[in-house]
Image (tube, rainbow, N blue to C red; front, side, top):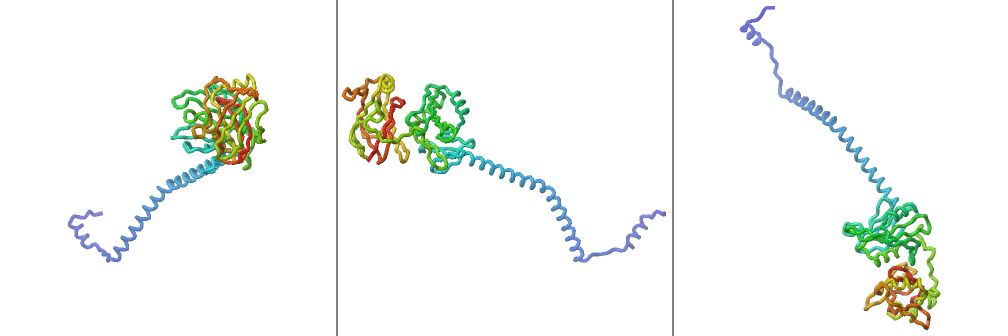
Length: 343
């Protein structure tokens, strides 16, 4: 093939046929190029985000399912009806008096804690017999005695801790009359003291199918003037709601009773039969109090005419009419009870 000279190439190019596009043709080609470019970019973006979108949807389903499962488990373990302080555990529910200085918080394991200023100050936990035994064995026990004067049978334990925030723990183990559960109600000192803890422990109630379970030893038969034969009695005018009157308590017994009578402060816990509420009935300096202060080993004041080994004059007032059980104790140790009717 003959090689062309530069002059011959220029001549050939000048003779090469050319074509020109009008404006419509140019615009059509430009639109087609833009469409192809957009389709290619969209396809690339879709392939990039498709796995990411799948992961987001899967994560949402997992989180939603977990949240539902946790709430279902939590609701099944403990149900709290706002304002009532009523918690559900199995086929039983339990209730304790609510105070303004702490809040009740439900826990997924079926227990409830008392919280104040962000700190735990007590709680309630349903326990099996084995769990109750382990709980007691883990404590630094100072006092261990059977509960007396409470709605349910059980055990009281004073546990010495002496940490930076807790000095002692007051443990109440209540036996359910219906099931094999033991309800562990506990209070941290110094946030609670013996009186405030006992008041709340007395308010503890267990229900089955909405019905209040009564303790096996609860007796509401009206007492005579001397309530428990050869043990305790009270003398004075009829009991009138809202009126303060003088009453004289008499205590009977021998060496064992003397040991209790000399333990210290004299306390009365009044329980209303209908409401189950506990209230102060002792009056001192125009104020309602739980107890009268007495030093340990204070001398006894017997009355020979009625053969009592000790007697205490009191001023008492009841808030409303009804049947009341008056549980007496000395230095935290129960002495005896009487049941009276307030008009």
